[in-house]
Length: 114
Length: 116
Image: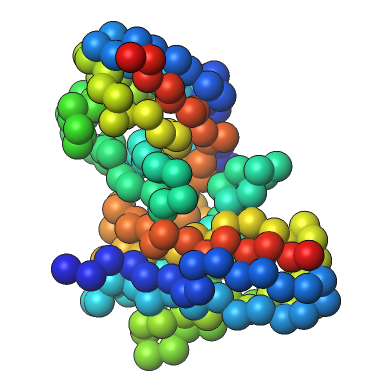
């Protein structure tokens, strides 16, 4: 079956611009996670959705970062006024339910801020 | 709070040799433990997981790991390395303590090179 998909695969943007990153989880998976992978910080948790609600936003690094999920499916991560330190690979993962142990990852979006 | 330490950012082994990648964790509650593999320019693929029960866990591609509570370790092994095992490996822990989230906390990763 189809796995987690993310778009775009690569995004180059100028400092100060806004970007939107999209995640399409595995059909039927109610839990969705965003992570960021960067050279300096490794893999970091950003935000967790259960259905359309986000009970855990503790990993969002600043108020420039926001995310939403609609219809219990697709999620969008938005970064406003991008900075060079936002350059990273943004990974999305989904799992069947909140307490499901296995998270399935998408291929990621590589964001470069120039 | 939970954390993961992977010893060795880079490990090299000869083809056919034993692979041993080390992982130690800390968690305030019984943890769930995972190993993921990442090939260049790809996402993370689950190799194996420990949740409850048998402490020796077998995964895909001939890998296995043993949960040792007394040592807070979850080392990954494979008896005989293959060229296709060259990748980056991440150990991760989840304890469900993040506002009900089962977010993963990852180690820094270990890049495995296999020498022909």
